[in-house]
Length: 297
Image (cartoon, rainbow, N blue to C red; front, side, top):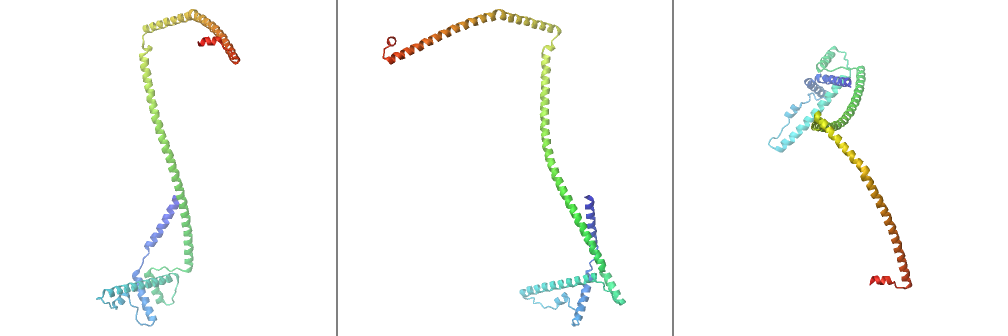
């Protein structure tokens, strides 16, 4: 891609250099136009050369006392000079192209010398038909090369555009990942601070605990722990031998009492049910229950 771009720029730089080095001889062209005007006037039988715009402007009378007339005259002058300019450019262009394309060989040496001097002064290139065909083919080849380079440049531009888009997407992803990494780094730092704090607390606890005791103090502490263990074993044995059996007997007595009370409750419920049925039967028969009346009284 870099080689194609360099060739493209080099080719165009060469074309621009050739264009800027071409000489435009306006003085010689003006002289030729005057000669052409003279020949045309003689051929038309006027016998006098065509007047230049300056000569024509000098022969025009202008009434300077009237502003409106001055404006009209200025407008006429502008139209006149515009026509003369267009005519000059047309004739000069036609003559230049005819001199370039046609190969007019005169037999007379004087005419040939004059033409050669004139062409030398005007810096005109004489191009034959064969040279013109070769130039046309070369121009077509250069155009095709230019088209190929343009297509290659367009492909390179498309690739660069796609690459830029891909780079932008990767940059956004990388930016997101960097933010996540920074958050994780902060979390790790906070966790490390917590771990250091916990380690510092454990060290202080170890210093304040039993590991900081002397050998005598450790033996005393061990003896106290053994004594407490023996007392606990004695209490457990007492619970198993005295308290637990007593509680078990008490639980058995309570269970028996609960069974007796449950049986009594069942008998009372049965008696109450029978009494209710008997009362309902007597009420259906229209009998008066003496016990109920006594109870109400």
